[in-house]
Image (cartoon, rainbow, N blue to C red; front, top):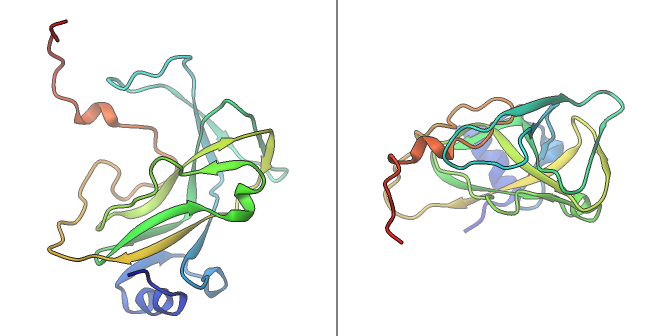
Amino acid sequence: MILTGPEITAAAADGRLRITPFDDAQVNPNSYNVRLGPTLLTYTTPVLDAHQPNPTHRIDIGTDGYVLKPGQLYLGHTIEQVGSDAFVPLLFGRSSVGRLGLFVEITAPIGDIGFHGQWTLMLSPIRPLRVYAGMKIGQIMFFMAVGPIAPYTGKYQAATGPKPSAYWQDLAPLEAVAP
């Protein structure tokens, strides 16, 4: 079951979910709007390597916005810190942003129960698009969990700002693979 807007408001008020800062004007019929934070990251090497950290370049979005370019992955973040120990959050791009040709979170929309922090956004534009810090970029829906809950305690917990992939931290030492 998905939480309705009034239930999102009630759950934020009684602590079943946390949204900081919370603004009633960002509550939708069955989701909560989140805004783009002021910082972006891009990877700086032409080839990314899943088995090691990849260097990034920080971009501060100025008051005139920042133009995202096609063919480039941008890591952004939400202004809001969002999380719940009771509900499963899913983050999607807003339809009005999608209609501008910006893909938001198309490969990893599911959050873990127990994660609390700013969400890193994977942004990929179809054509050049100027974005602004503070613009409503996505919406988070909350679903009821069924069964025992084991809260998230992973490497992205309490994130602030955009976080590059830390996939390499989960890898066992590489072993030779026979052809």
